[in-house]
Structure formats: structure tokens, C-alpha cells
Length: 138
Image 1 (cartoon, helix red, strand yellow):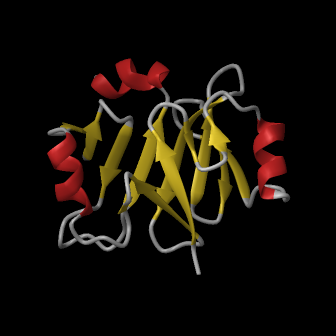
Image 2 (cartoon, rainbow, N blue to C red):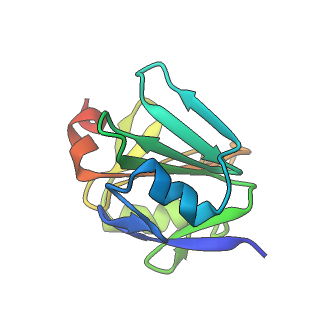
Image 3 (cartoon, one colour):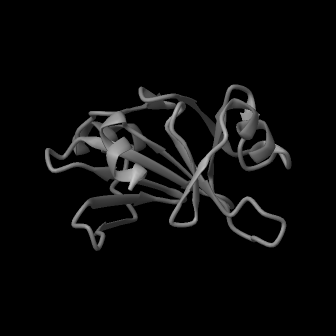
């Protein structure tokens, strides 16, 4: 059984609150991350199974991503984002997304998705803090 985390837009994903520090996040997992890596933008990312938690320059959580096929799953308003075949269509009813570098971005709810077409084998859901809206809008 996969653990399912519920999204609260611009607040949290399951137990992970935007603004948490690295120690608080590690305590929730009760283990060290599988991998720690800085991306090309210089943002720190910590990886546990299929979750990537990214931190801003103050080392506070500002982005949480999930990749399908792992231990953890994610839902929004009772929509199981990886298991419901009509998840994208349901999100589109909330807001028509803006396409940004291959992601469909739903600014009103702080969610970006990719890989939700029939030809894709892997889906990604990224939940972001309000501070990242200007970056996603570019």
C-alpha cells in the first residue's frame, strides 16, 4: 500500500509544510535522504524514494515533487493524482493551466504537472510555495 499525501494549496503536502527546515523534514522521514543534490539553478534537493523536497536560499522548503511509481502518492481534493486516469481533466475544471517548459501549471492551487498524456510512462506532480509563482510564470 502506498502512502497518500493530501495537498493543501500553498500550505503543505501531507506532513510537509512550506517553510520547514532540513532537520524538520528529515525527522518526518526518520532517515537520511537517499540522495542530496543541487540542481542547475543551485537549489538544494533532498530525495526520498519518489519525493524530492527543494529548499530556498534560507534552507526552507519551497517545492515538493512526486514522481509516479514510488512509495508515496499525492492527492488534491479527493483526486488521486497518479491513480485517477482523469486527474488532469479534473484539475482543468478548477483552472485552465498555463504551459511552462512542459509543465501544466495551476497557479490558483500551486500545482504543476507533467507526463499526464496517454503516451507518457512517468508522471510528475510538483507543489510549490507562493514565493515561486513569479518563477513559474516566466
